[in-house]
Amino acid sequence: MELNAKRTVAIVGTRNNSNYGKKITEELVARLKDIDDLLIVSGLAFGIDAIAHNASLSHQIPTVGVLGHGLGSIYPYQHKNMAEKMMENGGILSELFHDVAPDRYNFPKRNRIVAGMTDVTIVIETGKKGGSVITANLANDYNRDVFAVPGRTMDAHSEGCNWLIAQKRAELYFSPEEFVDFMDWGEKTKTKKASQRSLFQDFDENESILVKILEEKEGISIDELVEMSKMSQGRIASVLLNLELKGIVESLPGKRYMLS
Image (cartoon, rainbow, N blue to C red; front, top):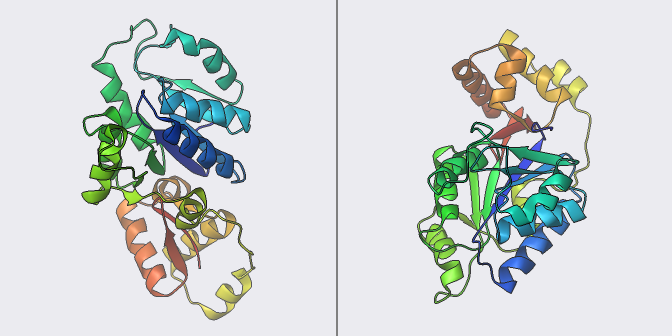
């Protein structure tokens, strides 16, 4: 199971979705199929989770389900066939021991994994007290991007999404295309600027290390830079800030960085 995709998206929502929520989810996943090196994560539950997983399988997008129980069983059992298909292109994972049974106290805990392992969380439909609101709040705490699909003010399915948007805990999700543009995941004309940087910029040792890494890999996170450069996170943050001020580096949604 490959978890180090360049772009990772959590798609979450209510177990009791509406046709509106189903359509939004399927349209979003259909657009994401054109994005290179992408992973879709959800919780294998009924409703929006299952719709997101199934749509991912249909479009051959790797998808991972994070469980609120051990790997010794699949809950709900109706999703056993879907989970088996996911093992061929994605997978399922759990932090719990193999034989731990489904327990309502474990499901909110697994939400922190969904939020933490992805660049962005998209809440499709949820009540104000739904587990997806927990996931969105955790994603905010982890400094991840969050989107919520707006709905009618009197619609219980959308109460949580509307609340997240109103509280500025989520960006308003308008369309798949606008989401892709916001995340800067669209097609770009790539130009080679390495030689120009070498000729016209004077970098210190640490700057040169990060520039070289960023030349080789676009849209990289600080965690990846720490691993590849062997510098501390604090040092990297300082060097990146200097490079941004020089116009060499730009920050991307999802707390990633690329050369300007």
